[in-house]
Image 1 (cartoon, rainbow, N blue to C red):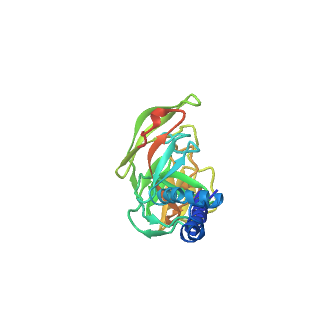
Image 2 (cartoon, rainbow, N blue to C red; image 1 turned 45 degrees about the vertical axis):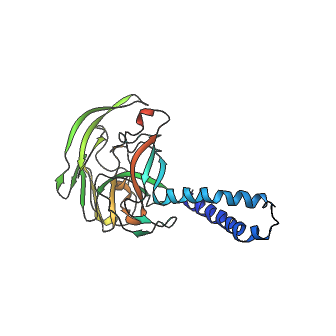
Image 3 (cartoon, rainbow, N blue to C red; image 1 turned 60 degrees about the horizontal axis):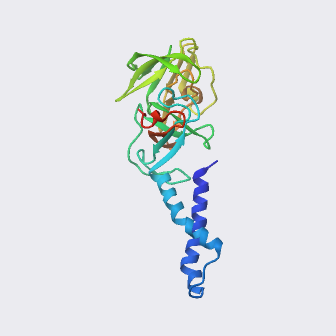
Length: 262
């Protein structure tokens, strides 16, 4: 469901009703006469829809985490806020950038439209920038020939399933974050699709090596063995970017999650 398009249609429809009532119908009605109920209600919703549309399109947009691909940073059921302007001002619905602000950096947690189906929003961490050579062999991340610092951070308890996973602290640029890695899972990429610039990647039994094309980004989940990401479906084009995730504002199962995003 394209909520942005639905909201835009409602905005246009209510705006037309408001304009007709304010500039035309109100001048033709007798003094003290009320406007038809459908005009009154439609026009009264216009300011509310306008505020919601502007906030959601240009400031912040709420999302709910549907999967465990970003564990331990984000859990299923987390409600997060996404900054819509940090990577530039984009026109609503068509998502075209009109004002450049900042570019994504390694380590950012970014929401984007899934290249394989732009009607779906995905969330992953930015690992590779345009021109980077990203290698993930034997579950170790290397960028442009430099191994990303990684150290043990103790086991992570999956409370819903009562089992532990090895947890590590990894540093990408200025961002230090946690990842989990399953020792028993195979090192090779088990699910690979056909995608643009597929020739930029080489797959082996030890993992994958990719050179990120211009205007694209390489994304990975923090749950390294439980994430379907750029290793399997390729690169995220710049025009698919939605915004930068920055805050957990609610979780029905665990109120302590509020504000714990990092």
